[in-house]
Length: 142
Image (cartoon, rainbow, N blue to C red; front, side, top):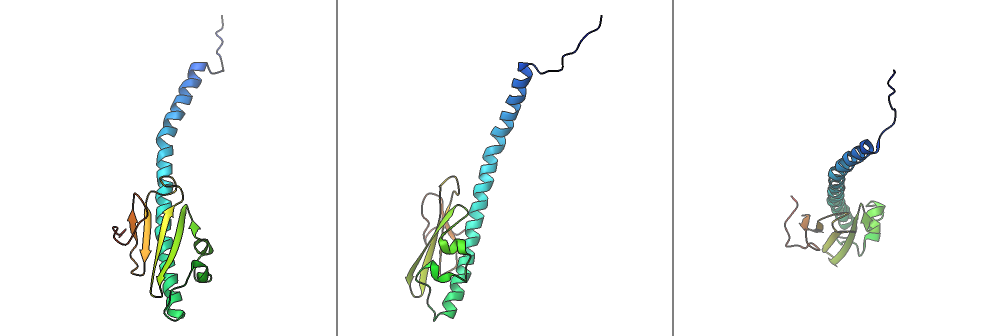
């Protein structure tokens, strides 16, 4: 008598494979989301530093005065930043006076596109807050 071997999977084997894949996904997906959020935060800090450089160039070439709005920085700054949104963050520029400004970078979806809020002013120090909009008294990002 010859033994015949089956060449198909049984339900238990398929369930074990699905359980293993689910376990790996449960471990990997939160880490991937955290990495994306950290990348967005780093991009926001870099964008603020680029914005600061552009504002200083504008200031020195336009009579020692900061622009009224970000739209005036066209040609000095990346168009996405001029539009006020980039990589999960919204940038809000406010000119306080001819010699003072501040910029807030806030996550579009807090806890998803970013976990920290950022602040920059004419002193060039990027500051952050984890619970709400950052200000001049918050700690620096270093």
